[in-house]
Image 1: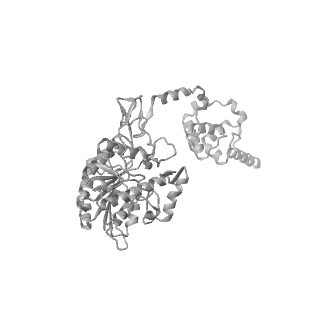
Image 2 (image 1 turned 90 degrees about the vertical axis):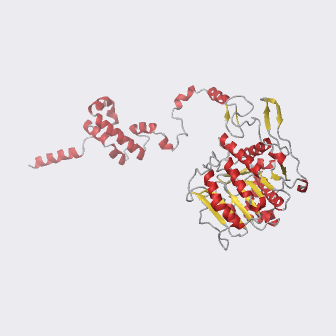
Image 3 (image 1 turned 180 degrees about the vertical axis):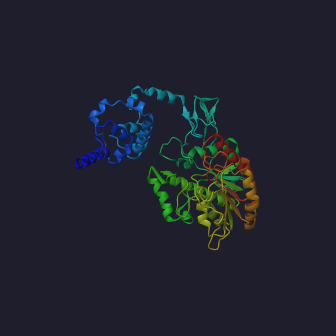
Length: 512
């Protein structure tokens, strides 16, 4: 009996600890492959006997089990990658990017790269003759002008002192003539007709550009301003119906009335650097500080000229934009707050109360911060807000000013994109004009961002040029027509949006 018990124990032990050479056990281990991985066993214990294993026979006998094994191996290989395991290695080759977290670091078929022909890439590049510097679209032929927007292929940032734009004459590059002549600076604004519109523009602002080369250019780039200026020239608006004012760099004393000394220094230091970034989207180069001073100086002088009666109204073709720049923050493509500088310059010239109407699709958080305690400046903004999820996240209806200036910040936040002419006109008629009329401003500034225009890649709204023109007409009646339009956002993504900006600029000019 004792021998029988020992024999039974041995049989139980044999079942509990199956011999490694048993083929039945091998199949079972494949079905429970995860058990082997949990023990960190990297290699099959019976590799020496794998030569007689027939996977096709196993597949025929146990197809369902094979499917289960495949699923199990796939799950285990993702959770515990072991590149040295034979079967796992096959799985890793199929999902190589899981190891390196990128599909771009390695070529999955390096062995097949020997037949790669570099001339094929050259042939593809030859099809695209050139990229338009205005609308950034590629041109598939050798025409001298862009088929999309008509810009000449040799257009570039103009050299200082020559406000000109090149256009093709009968599609012959040898006959290109400047279509815009240089308008000489007016030595004295008193010599210009007081009934005309003053315009501020300086080519040095075009030198502010992103140095880093990217597949698509930055939305706030020099070509945008140059295209608007050229369009106004072709329409006979500038020069012609307008007179320019001499460009001047804003002084540090004037900037100190708006920004902190730390803010000013952070901008000035960029003049010593070839390329730098304030934030991931706000670049600077060695010319950016000068461009920002010129933009602010032009806005200040235009405001002073309009308030003093030396000009009927003004239009500031300036960059970089400014309404996101706060007391100490540089952000949102903006370096100095041009509208804030203009408002204080207008008050220094005699205007007691100033209205700033901001129709840029983004809230002008910088302008609001500067004046939210000032009862002599009424700031009204219409912008996308979407419960604070749309950049910059400020501008809720509850933000009305403080410290005795409650009610002098008016925010009209849109809860979604797609708003168009009817929405804006309704807001003007029922909110903007009643409040502005009661405020009775002596001078009106429009922070004219055109990124709510139909087709803008950042704004996602639907305002047409005629919609902007109608809003301009409504505001023109305030403050006796003393108004300054300052360019803010509005970024070229494709031809339709470019034409929208250009037409809007023309419409606004015709109305002021």
